[in-house]
Image (tube, rainbow over all chains, first blue to last red; front, side, top):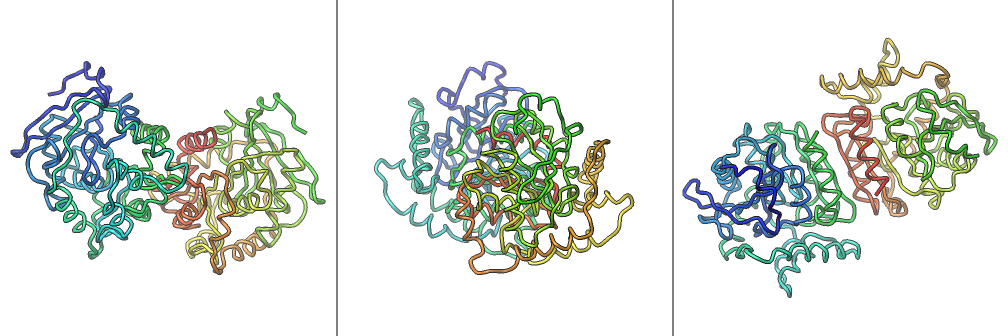
Length: 288
Length: 288
């Protein structure tokens, strides 16, 4: 199903939404960038769609590799239901990747998408070359049994326009971070045509059920990480209040082959505050 | 006293040892690389001399900037006594940098040299543009009140040849890390002429007194870090047993403007295990 070299003509803004079926689910996806090596498959955060990725990041990474965005089951224009376990989301993601016909991929996951990325590596280890885990944490991590108090406050408030919520989720209150946040919002709004529909009202409750199960205290919670042997790059903002950055440190300490980068004065979306630096760090990591 | 553009002809292996006087101390130093911007001043680890730096790192960084190595007071061919406080070592380092005639520098510190680098930034904030803190920690950090049990064992053993101690200080027991360690030792031994004399028997006790004072538990130990406002890059190995990597995490969380990088399967000398990657990360940080 690979469409070959003509894909390089597309960008984040122009890549058409395509569909593929697996496990009775019709998955929406987009692919663009330089075909050839292992494509980089993106797994999105809480309530996000393909349009919630930053084109500075996706197009930046697409210069040297193929980028695959998708909506997992039950999200936006993908059919099916959102599973209430991360395990289920991982199984759906694996089915999607196979259905697109990608035998070996790099996997990037952000926030809950980082949990899913870990599940993909556990369920289909031979399919995954390298992992990039952004703003995420391990099973049973610190402050992960429920949404953090800060996350409850941020996601519980209303914003006008609504997408300004991301100024509070992804950025710190500092002037520098908020300025970067405004720039992110401009980029985020750029794709004019064929945007994904917003997620329906069943998505958030199902995702919260899944992530609180994942984050619940458990016996020897980090032992499972020994099985994720792929080279892994961990990235987070040093002041993330959605998933505390200590969880990235815990991942580094327990994964067999993980590099950690924490950025200064930045929060959950540190990769959107420093998109150029993030693209450079990820490219260096993936190309080594 | 800047010697200008002809310095670029020298490398780690050929740079002559020069001397400069300040505070009644005759400091030994070497400088090489590309003159022009802020030179990068290196502060060495426990019992080390200028010859304990890895030429892959110093020459790698010297491609785009001037590198300044020196022996602080009482170390090897520098006169004077090793102070029993980090504060005193910092004051000597500041005096040295001024005496060489460098108004603005970047400062790299490794291990106890990282404590000294923090003191330089606190005592002479206007002199320091950026900081690179490698394998180090804050005042009152975790496991820093004495040498760690692992450090006591490693530094208490004997090695034949003696410089094989660095295979145990700087590298993990893994095959990959030990292989990198053997490569490091080859590079470390390359400088054939004009090596520094080994430190005398007064150095280790004075340095241990200083570092245990620095590491002793104290009230609100990390408050002082708010005063270090320079952009800072923190680097450590994820399995450092000399200064536990959680101390780099604590530095990141408490410094106003710090980026953290932890490397996989690596110990105190992670920058010598991944010299090319380290040079790339440090160059990106210093050039931004």
